[in-house]
Length: 215
Image (cartoon, rainbow, N blue to C red; front, side, top):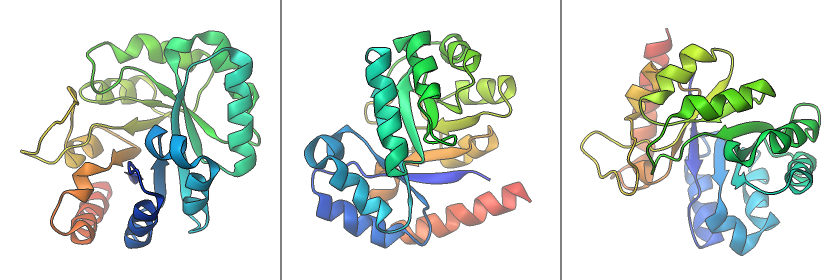
């Protein structure tokens, strides 16, 4: 059953805390990206961990293999559930990242093509699959293609937007319902939740839809 990841894309850590407390009954995973991490560092991870929730550290690692491997190791020691590496960084980076996991964590999620760009995700996914990474970050129509190609991998879908809502900078978008039907394991949602009138009611309805669809 697809899980929701709420994106903590805030400048203020107090605002992030408020949203975690508000949604923690319905959301088990929270994303920490550049916006919060570059301002607060490890403290941004602690606000999630202190609530007993799982951390998706979305830093899209793209550096020399040793540096990326050390980042993965440090994330593992902190208890991070998953971390992103950009598959364009090459095979050695992917190899070092996998080698640096501790007891299978953090899960390595390979970024294929950003949802703000056009491109073929399958070509990059092949590189990640060669080294048995745990999953892929993929958006739009490529979600179904990667699910069919790699049925056992975690499929993580950003660019989730509500029907009729603004795409913002995303070129490839799906509604939550579309992503679930295509086989997504994780839906990364930030503004799509924040901008609705009643986020808690919205999440309750989405959770009911997921349960019905997976029955």
